Amino acid sequence: MECTVRWAGLSGMSFLAETGSGHMLTMDGAPDGGGRDLAPRPMEVVLAGTGGCTAYDVVLILRKSGQDVRGCDLTLKSERAEKDPKVFTSIHFHFSVRGVNLKPSVVERAIKLSHEKYCSASIMLEKTAVITHSFEIIDDLTLEVVAI
Image 1 (tube, rainbow, N blue to C red):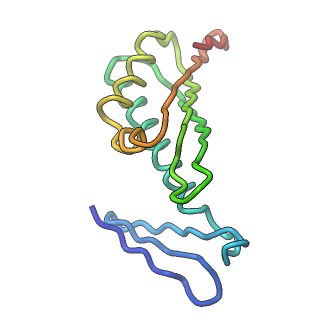
Image 2 (cartoon, rainbow, N blue to C red):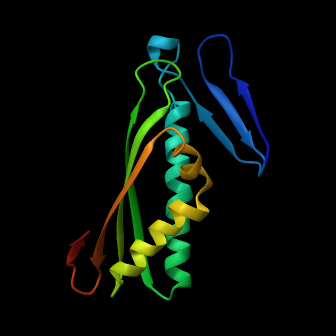
C-alpha cells in the first residue's frame, strides 16, 4: 500500500494525499497551528479510517452470516494523551445496526471478530488505546431498539 502526501503551499497547513488506489484526500491543521480549518485534521482521518475499517467488517460479517442488515452507523469517541506524542488513549465504538430480525449474538460476534481478527486499524490503535464497544439493534419491522 502506498500514499503520497503533498503540502498544498506556503500559505497554510493543508495537505493533499493521493492513495495507492488513486483517490484524493485533503487534510488541514487547526488555525492555532497555521491551518485554515478547511478539511479534517490528520488524526481525525485516522479515527474515521478506523471506523470505516471496522464498520466494513461488521456489515460484511453480518451479510455472510445471513443477517438481513440494512444499516450500520458507528460513533467513535476518543481521548488523546495531553502531551506529545498525542496518541489515542481510549476509543469507544458504538454501533447502531439496523435490519430485520437481527440476532444480538451474531451482531456481537461480528463486532468481536472485527476487533480481534480483521480490523487492522483498531488492532494497531489498541497498542496505545483502551478500546471498548457497545451496540444497539434497530429492528426495521417493529422499529424497536435493543441496546446492548
